[in-house]
Length: 166
Image (tube, rainbow, N blue to C red; front, side):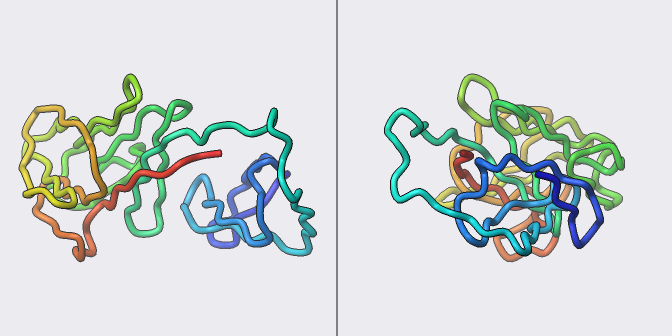
């Protein structure tokens, strides 16, 4: 199915299998704003047959402003930096052109700093740390500050959390 984003006008191709409720929460592939489905009548099966059930796959969700990026097996890499070509563009003098990478490797998620000013990482129930030219495994919900310190309430933070994709 083709759904145009009301926010940016991007043409999204959505698999009907992803729509499992009356008001699905599916983000636009370009801007991350949730898509709207008008006039669609969804008939939900009471219980799918056992052979159709599939275990949910893990994913890491990154959110910066209105931009939402999902990292998983299919999309195993996301770039953060000042350049427009990055998956998450952060316009700030302390942010390098390609500042950091988020990668999915062997079922785990890693943050790799590639910058001059380092990357600040704060995960729940842990102390915040500054990473410089190193790789660290992401294990909990948290926030990233490329080149600057952030907390969970910082408007300039890149929020990260784990989810599942159908």
